[in-house]
Image (tube, rainbow, N blue to C red; front, side):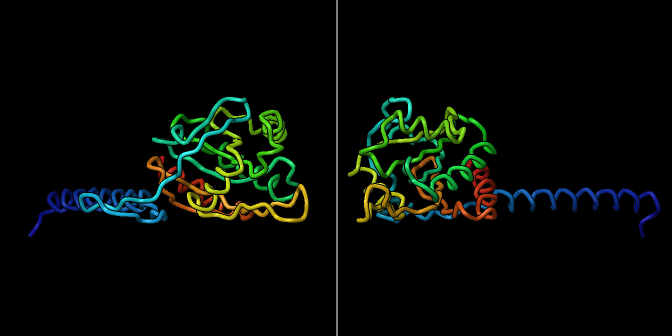
Length: 210
């Protein structure tokens, strides 16, 4: 039989144990890993090898060169747009800015917006677009990587739609999806930028990866 003093110490110890267990359980839930959505292309030492982001080169809104090498070792978020887009791109950019603002200008995170109208979207046009939406952050790049590169990236690397239509200069078919990619260039999530709940989930998932 436990006396009153021992019962007290037992109760305190039990309370501490339960509180500690609950803390670690919540930590595990919070750090629950995101799935890897990239295509498996092989194995090495028993580990999957995934299709990453293909090599490319181009320039950003400042006229500086930008290539796939700058994405390595950093978590990045990507979308596809064009500066003269009348409806979808402005809405997508507004929502994307909410994500970038929530994460902040971190060195381990990049936002990359690929133009699917490289013929017209010069560095000046890209800068004007960024300024229009107050999206001129140090870690947000509006990119022109050329026609061949951009459509290959959309189709094979990010696995989303981005093609030119047939109805004139402003006819481009592209997705409003934001793609989350980890520091090993593996896709970890797709998010519909038109849905507020998807934006909230994206911010939480980004913080997990970071």
